[in-house]
Image 1 (cartoon, helix red, strand yellow):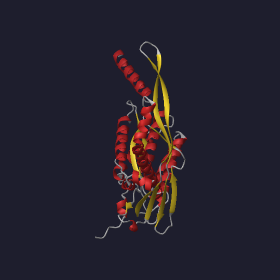
Image 2 (cartoon, one colour):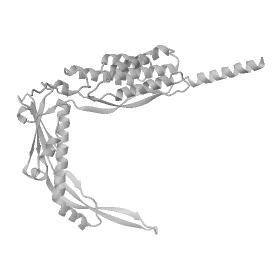
Image 3 (cartoon, one colour):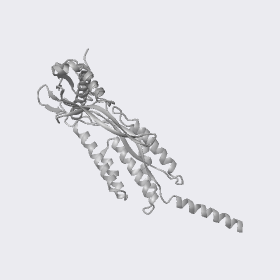
Length: 355
């Protein structure tokens, strides 16, 4: 009898220990890589078009840069480049100005060095600081001049370049004087390519479908003593794989997502205790993941529905606000053009070229 009571007591003790270990469930961020296409800020008509690029350097710039390299670096993401400029619906003109050196000065830098005998000596370093100006500007226009946008790059005034450091003033000065033309040519190339990058970003953001890549978050749990731990973690791992399988051209696999949706929906129905912190955190993680699934399935109304449930579940209001904001961004993107998704290949919207 005593032995039986002892066994029952030990069993009861383990039961209490298990309950104590599952009073709470830790919810962790689980990062994944995401990719999609942004919708143009100012969609054009036609939405998918051909563009041409014209580079106009000054005579001095032409001697120092390869014009074709700069032209190749200008693009509108998601649109097609015309082989012949007269066939283009949109033209990007990039004007490259002169580099004008205003001054070159040998600069001195000192550094205290502790010697082996404990004494301190001063080490001198010399470089040449160059002050110069450079300007580039662009014009973007359509054939019918409905659109005509222009802008200036590097208008802020003086730019600076510093050479490497040398041990004497003469070495620093000689380096600049002997290599001046090569260094200026390098600056022309550097700033011309920067200008190409800037005009490409402007044109792509405003009139193209640029690819957006980044990191986002879903939720997982970490509580080995909880019955749901293993299956929830596996579901989150599967969700991460599904989200990372998306590309700018390929949307999420909706059929595979349905099973995950059903699972995460089952969590709030299964863990209903309003006083249990573990139940509350499980519901929160499930609602959060459902929001993210519907964001990338591009169903903003359902995102809003589960964002509200995060709030009513008693979590941080900021999560609800962030989800509602994401839902509104998706809604605006889908309503902006005839393209009702952020995952597509622009090629499918261009007419077949007749042979």
